[in-house]
Length: 103
Image (tube, rainbow, N blue to C red; front, side):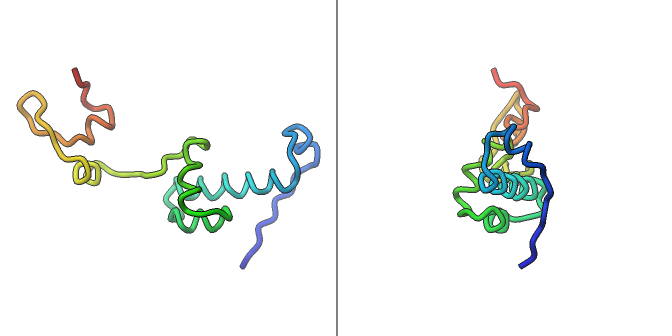
């Protein structure tokens, strides 16, 4: 296993009011979640990097402003189906993405 070292000043810990361990765990989790969000890691790989279970990692996503799932329009349509809008059948992905205003 490889190790990544990040240098930081102790004044940062004082400003954040955190211990070395808490800060390093938070930094590792943030990096893992960002790599997951970018599609560079699977949720399982990110969870392993963060030192937590996959479910716990996915539950942390909103706290970091990261989506726990990233679906494209085809995946959303397969999952949620379609509906009639103004006589035209549209995928619900358009509703979710904000392309269609519902009244």
